[in-house]
Image 1 (cartoon, rainbow, N blue to C red):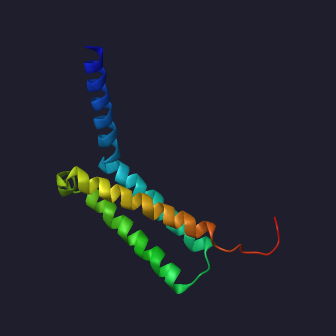
Image 2: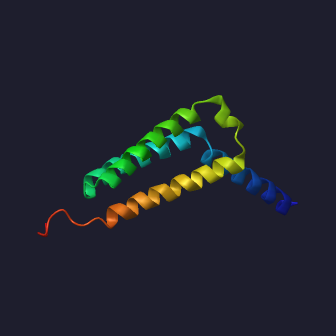
Image 3: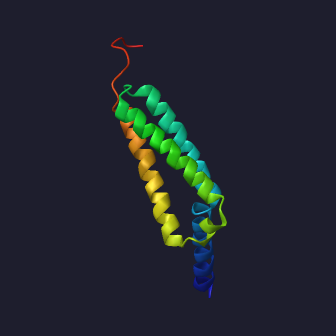
Length: 111
């Protein structure tokens, strides 16, 4: 009997966590974070045209994503699609952070 209750509570907890992860507000906050990271990356990385172009493209895509999450059609997307989009955003954030970490120091002097 107690195992049955534990399973029900566990399933409810997982379902609530999933709903939190695919909530449109979660996507909006992730898009804002990635856009801010892209701005920081453009300042930290060497000002090469391809980096600046990528940063502008990322910012545009994050604005489009924010707009999309406000549309009623976003709620109609399947859970699987939303999870794939979330995973893609996480990977994008990791790639930006990695490129910022591998950027050369702006000065040769140690601070």
